[in-house]
Length: 395
Image 1: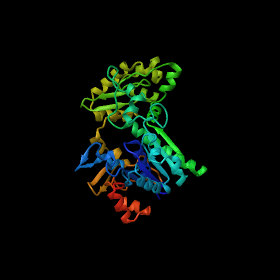
Image 2: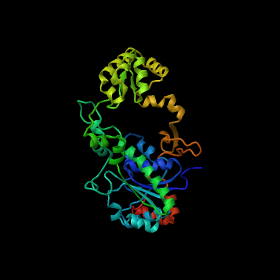
Image 3: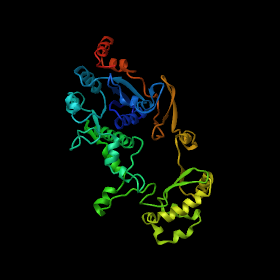
Image 4: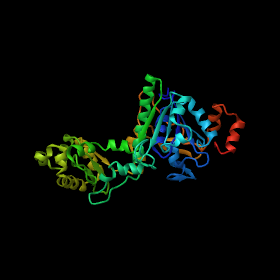
């Protein structure tokens, strides 16, 4: 049994929050139909690295999806869209506000043909406000949320992440919003709009900075790998040149760490009693912990921390991840047969259900791979599909 096997999702979004939200739904059995532009294709096909001319990000982003291509901006494409959405449960789109309306595909029009449709509208800045019509990407959300302002060394510039972080956080929020709306539909019988601005979920996960600003007037500063909430918390280099990360969010862990490194006297200091006051003494704590680690190889340090039941982890790059026994035990990486590349390695589903687990059935397919199948199910005959292809309406 697939837990979302009764849900059909039309994924008309691009780069990256909307499509990844659809991926999460597809991982647990939803019938996700990815709709690309028939001539341009989806931009993620050409984003990032490729092998033999085949985009690798696409293979991850469009796994478990059937793919077709329809131009929603022309009347015949709009008719295809209405047929697609007539028996769908969810539409995920990230066009600029007003675009669906300009194409005669406004929510009110879609609900005329399918009142149970949940419509997830994923944009940089939401459907209203002075910036709503601007182009918006995750990078701008990372800038505007306060993330970049607190990331980096104290004397360095604000730092952006080298990955689609805000999009990734937003994708989880979109999937959550869709499931909430689907559950509400069971009570009301009607779909609704899920309006998600990418600038908001990342703002939420940054913690109580807004609360602290309004209550205390404080503005967080860049602290590098340190934390303003606890110490010791940093990255430390071992004798054999490896890097380790330590966290002491819990008081008892902090005590174990300083005892392990031979400084039990620090526990008796009045300032050691809370994470916030420990953070004010990060220089002293880092000197004690970092000095002890620098005199030992990584394996020795990790073994000692494990015996002391203190929290430590190696700083991995992708090579380490690919060979790590913990990831292997969780089956976090799967190898999926692929008609274009033979096999691709992909991250597995993001959580495990004990009774109805999800899974990856196939990687992102070639453009238009399922067009005949999808359009045929909508009532289009072979001649109709050929005519629409010739006209550039579908691919």
